[in-house]
Length: 418
Image 1 (tube, rainbow, N blue to C red):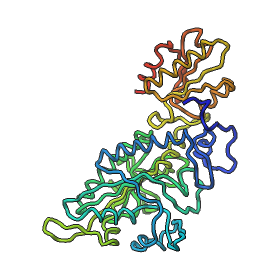
Image 2: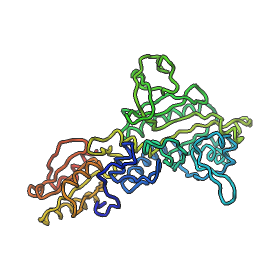
Image 3: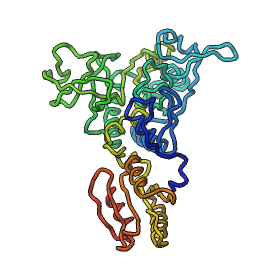
Image 4: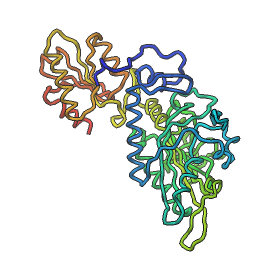
């Protein structure tokens, strides 16, 4: 991508109507644009990051046997009536069509997936089944003030599993836990994300959240450093005791919820009369689980954690581009030719590169923009470097600047990012 052709530009000023750091810096760096409170447009750079997060999630979901579908966002009132949530789900956006029928914008999709699965699952031979989607959700949030962490429209991966019994659900539940930790590790959040006990379990006292430590978090959790698990403040007892080992004196931290998993049991299958026939010909309840991760919230959380005073520092797996190549304008034609040639070689090597080829922008602005955008590797081609037949290379998370022979740059970057 040539930066001279990039649809968006960076902004010097902090947006006056935005209080959250993640939204401020993503707007300034040209990743998103704010349409209204809790509603954002993903611009070319932001969409690249979002897509990479979604691709990681897809890879991990596919690896545990889940199949991807895409459900409607517009849902009829009658399915919400079946689960008694039309009047009990406060965050539903409701509307009336020209047919005078009432609809809701999808805030969650248990009401859609359950009757859909019912059309295809009849026997124990059809189970288990794991189905997921990545789609925008809509919630009428009263306090959409944390940027992309709490939006009124946001992206969500929701996985639903269908089982013959509790034991089969329990087994898959553990499989999903491991997959979630792989996702968070690949997104650069592995060491600071904790499995967190929360309320709402169908089969037990608890369900589970995945909470990532950050000062921007809206939640308070208590961490057991012995078990490496946490418990949400909303359900912790006065003694603040670890639910696994009974340890006291847990560590209090602020965090943001980046994922959650629930054992739904037969809560939704009962509402739709969804049963299967077992080996003995008897009708039994289908047991369900659900598992959510918000890619847009995950993107915001990454930004809240991976940054410095100059801008974003993207982990390499989710960065919009691996390399930010800066051409510093010079009267010597060789400088531009070398930068163009290096850009071509990166593309031939399938290394994603953002090429700052802008002729009307000074070196200082280019350096500031590169730090703000936050690609993992910055490479500078200038008259000074060309006089030495070198390129200047700097990792975004390091202050060290090194000079590498021009002909060795591509291979050096490959090794650097392994």
